[in-house]
Length: 194
Figure 1 (cartoon, helix red, strand yellow):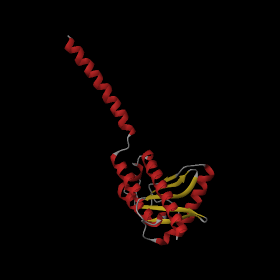
Figure 2 (cartoon, rainbow, N blue to C red; figure 1 turned 90 degrees about the horizontal axis):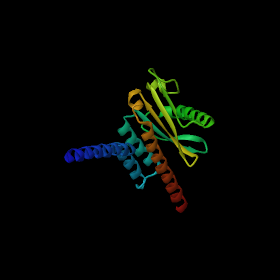
Figure 3 (cartoon, rainbow, N blue to C red; figure 1 turned 135 degrees about the vertical axis):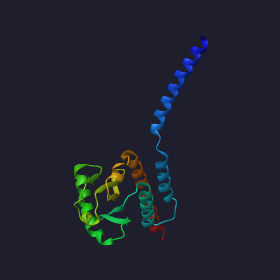
Figure 4 (cartoon, rainbow, N blue to C red; figure 1 turned 180 degrees about the vertical axis):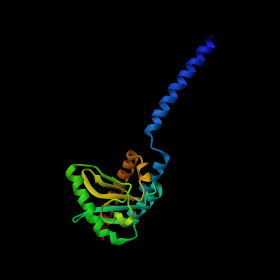
């Protein structure tokens, strides 16, 4: 009889342990997200320019999240300016910058964090129909209440992007913000020294 009591106690303790283990596991970021974060953080240790760093960030994001187009913008006196993109057709840049600055102003006015547009057909902002864009995710990169830039993700299908876990992607974006702010500070320091 004592053996049965010990077995029941061990079973109950095992169940409690497994329950706590799975609860804790939910708090830990998935391994593939950790790899993306590591790759992005490692870029801050390279002696690259801001443009090279943003290009490398785009390569990491496109590879991991299977994005058709990814663009990183930097905020300056003129507003948001495209710094890097994997879209090789630069004729879209002026219209896209103008549109994204309007979107950014609307987000600021409405105190919104991001804009997501999706459609079964092409979206109807400048150059989207021409490039057959069906999904757009625009996220300002904010550091201590100051916007330093933005990320624009565009896809020709909705499926890839709708599957992204938004909370985990937010951690990736926060990491990008830190790396870009670090690179901006390094560039300012380098300019001041020389």
